[in-house]
Length: 372
Figure 1: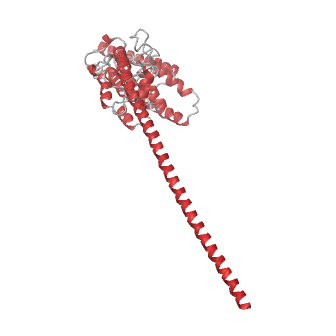
Figure 2: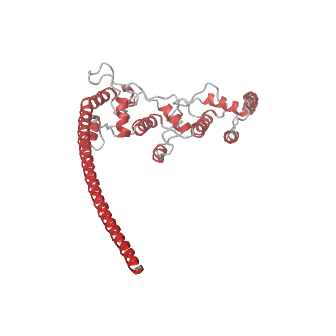
């Protein structure tokens, strides 16, 4: 009986285990089925979302294409009906195509362009490529505005000023004056009748403040700082970088030598200016040739300034002081009279001595002739 009871208990355990295995198997089958349904649902949802996104992207792309086409059309209209006509008006007024940033089309211009801030438009064309980016045809249209006189659109305003104004005006000055030392106050003549056919300037360069530009180049490095090409262009044209040294070595010293050659001394009157024609020195038959760049040089005023320098206390610049001392030391070997009163006293004494010698010689000659 004990054996049967143990057998029944074992059979019961086996039955329970079998039932549990069945339950577990069905549970596994159910879970796998649910996972498959879930995965299928997620894939469908992802596909649906992807389709929606594609549709939205296509719609946005279509809207973007339409907007770009509309902007391109508007840009073309503005360029052809506003920018080009305004640029032609500016060219007709000024004779060139370097539009200043602050330029506004005058109010008496055609209504379509009157009051337009052309300078701002041109500035954006230069630096952002507005209206012309990717369009060689429009770039050529800008250049074509000034083709009648050989003018092209100024893509770099500073470059245009340097190569189209400073260089031609400096070349004109050198031809007219024989040197490149431009005074600060100098402006090119405003009247076209002042120019010769061999040395003329374009209309927009008449009245150009060349002296101010030259002074900025010397003192501040404007136009040439970081631009060796411009520096070389000026250097090849006899550009004077140090006007004080130029006036000393190329004008003052030659003018003093010329004065001494004619007058025999260097006591220059304070109001003296070098004339175009000078008298021949005593005992010399050939006329004195006066260089063109020396004519009108105020030598007397320069000499007075030199005397003032010698007795003036040196400035704060040690280099400038040394340069000035070196210049002044060049004059003493030439016989330059630093003390005018002393020079004039000696000149009077010398004149009396010469007169006495002449009188003594005349008396001696007269005595000799009477004894004969």
